[in-house]
Amino acid sequence: MLHAEGVYKSFADFMAVNGAHLAVGKGELVAVIGPNGAGKTTLFNLITGQLRSDKGQIVFKEEDISNLPAYQICRRGIARSFQVANVFPRLTVFRNVQVSVLSQQRKSMRLFRPAQKMAVEETGRILASVGLSDKAWHTAGSLSHGDQRILEIAIALGNEPELLILDEPTAGMSPEETASTMKLIRGLADSRGLTILFCEHDMDVVFNVAQSIMVMHQGVTIMQGEPDEVRNNEQVQEAYLGAVD
Amino acid sequence: MLTQKSVWPYTFIFIVLLVLPPIMPRFYTYILAVVFVTSLLAMSLNMVVGHGGLFQFHHAVFYGVGAYTAALVITKTSLPMWTGFVSGPVIAAIVGLLIGWFCVRLTRLYFGMLQISLGSLIWAIAFRWYSLTGGDDGIHGIPMPSFLSSLTSSYYFILIVVGLCLIVLYLILKSPFGTTLRAIRDNPERCEAVGINVRRHQLVAIVIATFFAGVAGVLFVTLERSVFPDLLFWVLSLEIFIMCLLGGWFTFAGPILGAGIMVSLRTFVGIYTEYWTLILGVILILLIFFLPEGVMGYILEKVKPRATATVEEG
Image (cartoon, rainbow over all chains, first blue to last red; front, side, top):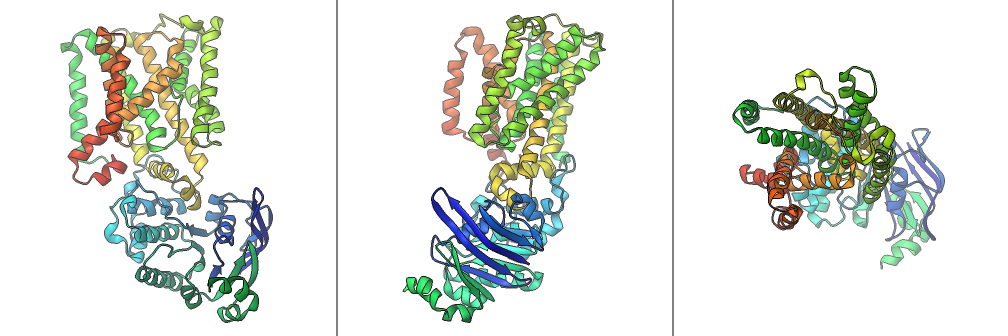
């Protein structure tokens, strides 16, 4: 479904992504791991168009998306969450998700119909599926960190994506929150038939959940394979798992 | 949407404004009309500043362009007068589109700086091109159609047009477009990532705002029958920016209140001292410390138990 081939991105003299390769098949749960500064977030930003790659190809459903602006990539069916909670702080939780649903329905440009009665059902359903219904009328900025991260995912779901990209979905969460969030993500993948690409620091989470793991180190893809393959790969142990010990 | 409960106060205010002129001194009729025109100007600015989060630093240009267009069409061409009234807002919106097209490519402060530069260019044209615009003298004694012959009839015309414009602005701000605009204000990056074409939205908002600024400019001409370069000077842009802050830029009606306060200060404090801006300065300092959401923001916070909703829905 998604293929990245030899992707490069530098900031001034620093090579943030220095030859990344990634393959995501339909319906898969794929994890990207690597130590801090390995280029995971940069790679995600390149895929979803927040940044533009210097070299390489990113293909989604047989179409080269490397040079499309972010909003066009989203309309092709890729939605994402961000590493730091990235919501609309002054809007209510309901509006946060509604904005994304309205965009999906191409109604953002309607000028004279009241928004209050539009996309209410879809928005309500998404909020229910992530468990934020009772907080629908709180302003997003007043939510706890954990809830804001969940809201991030809800906003992404509003786009009815085929591929959902989550940048460290459990960063800064307590162990209980992490567990329930991962359960939620797995549940969404099953119930909606979503393909999910995520990166994560917690190795237990990754090896439990992911069907395929791509390992990055200093901007370079070391390998991609099934969890067992990755665990037993010498290069990976040296470059990454070794560094943890 | 407009519920019955929220319509009543506005209807009441409108009726009061309708019956006032015959029982009010002429001077106050004139001041109220000035407040209406200024309110519409401030409301149009607030659409892009308060709701759109754009640094629209030189909004007065579009007000001036609307006024000058109407004045020039009426005095320099043989076209019927109503074409002057219509072309004012349209030309203002076209100039808004042109300037906006460049500005939305830049972010925040750079947006504002470019707009000040391009706007000052237009001001310079009005100020220097004596043969067309009358230079710093402006154009005076612009003829008006007979139904606008008296101050009272201008008052009613302005009241009705401003009322209609406010209803349209209200509808736009409550629409999906308005909601999306506020989302862009809060977080443009996230909006891109949910598939929204941020620049196009901002550009449309600018065109709408500059159109209504043009309407305000035309209304100014019907009231004063003259135009002069100060209408598109940056000082006025700053004043309407202050009106939005003063009234409450995250609320719908805040700028009206801000315009009322500013015009009153200028008129009534201005009688006693030419340094009325000194008092404005003190008020602004107090405002920043004690009412950061503006006067209207403060009132809504007191009236509504759930302060959270005022921020977005007001």
